[in-house]
Length: 98
Image 1 (spheres, helix red, strand yellow):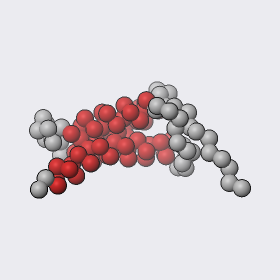
Image 2 (cartoon, one colour):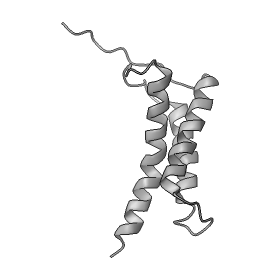
Image 3 (tube, one colour):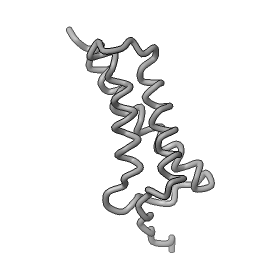
Image 4 (cartoon, helix red, strand yellow):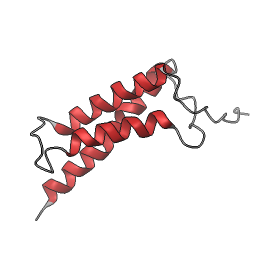
């Protein structure tokens, strides 16, 4: 009976992740360069701040319109700022195709 809240939490959680992934893709020349090694501070900071924005209306703290979209935008902008501040962990090199 509380499916809407579940989907709002999913949007708040995955919105910033998708925003960060989009920015990482764009910064790497529109190609996937591979996973990042270990703990990626830029990704965690982008997720935390984006999730914070996305969860505000669920906790009834502030009525953010289109909260999952706002979480996506915040995650993307914060990831970009962190990338420009050189907070990215290195990319794990992938094996070449045979």
